[in-house]
Image 1 (cartoon, rainbow, N blue to C red):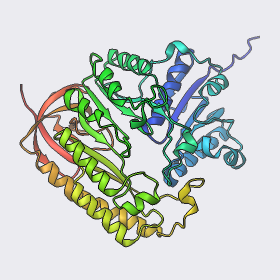
Image 2: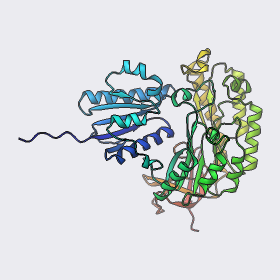
Image 3: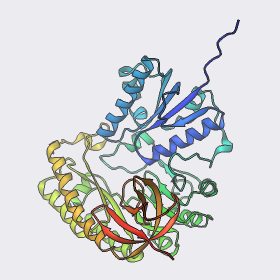
Image 4: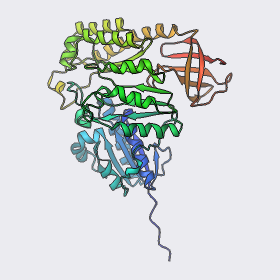
Length: 438
C-alpha cells in the first residue's frame, strides 16, 4: 500500500514597508532558494504552504497594513489554504510580546536580526557563500543596495532605533562584491539605502566613509547610475559632493529628509540642526553639484507645532524649491521621546497641513518640470503599461518621483535600456517625451 508523501515545502514571502525591508526579503529569498527550497516573493497563486510576512512598524498606517496582512493569512490558515504563518520585520521586532497574545495563530515571530533563526525554522542553513548574492524582486535593471543597518540618531519622533538597533555599516568589500554580482546580472542602477547613509563607516573605519564607498562603487563596470538616499543633514560629509560632481555615473540626486523648516521644531525633534544651517547646507549642495535634484520629506503636526511654526515651514518650502517632496502627518509612536509630549495637533489639522504643503509643492514641481520642455535627457525605461513606456531621468528614484512617459505605439523601446528623450510636455509629477535618434 502506498503511503502519502509529505507535501513539498513552498514558501511565499510577503513584503510590507520600505525598500530596506525589500532587501531583507531578497536576502531571505536568496538563502532559501540556495537551500533548495521552492520560494516565491509576493506569489499571486495560493499554492504556498508557508507564508513569511516581512512587516513594517514605522507609523500608524504601516502598522495597520501589517496587522491586516497577518490577519488575512491567519484566516487563510484556518481555511486550510496555508499551513504555517511566520512573521518577521519591524512590527514583529517592536511588538512581538503583545502580538503573540493578540494573534496566537501565528506559528512564530522573528525580529529584524533573526535571519539565522528564521532559516532554521524553515529547515534551511545560513549559507555564507551567498553573501553578496541576491535574487531581485523588482526589474533587474535597478537594485537597492543596503549599505548599513540601524541608526544612532536621537530623533524624538522616530522608532527606528527601537526596531533596527544601533548603526552597523556593511564592509566596503562586501558591498563592492554585491555591486559586481548585480552588474553581472544586468543591473545598471544602484540605489544606496540605509537608515542614515551619512553615518556610513563610522563604526568600522572610525570615520565617515561614504565618499570612498561611492568612489569604489562608481568603479564597478556596468553600473551606469548610483543614487544616494536617506542622507542626514546634521554633520553631512561634504566630500560626498565632490565625488558626486566628478563621477559621471553618480546621479545628481540626493534624498535628504529634513523633517521641518522651523528651528524651534527642529530642536524639539532633536535633529541637531537649525533652519539657518539647513539652508546653508542646501546652498552648498547646489553650488558644488550644479543641477542636482533634491528630494526631502517633512512632518506636519508634530507636538508643539503652532500655526506660526507651520507657516515657517510653508515659507521654507516656498524658498527652498525642492525638486521632490513627501509629507507625513505626525504619528504618535510609543517609546519615542515625542510620545512623552502632548500630541496637541488634531488629526484633521495635521491632514490639512499635509494638503497645504503638497499643494504648494505641486505648483513648484509644475514650474520646475515645465522648464524641462524642449530639453533632452538620458532616460532609463522601467516598464511598459497600456500604450506607454515609463522611464526615469537621473533626477528621479523609482516609485516616489517623476516618470517620463513615452508613446509605445510610436516607439519600439526595451525595458532596462537607456534612451535619449526630448521632453515635449509636463504635468506636476510627470514628463511627456519622445526618443531622439543619436
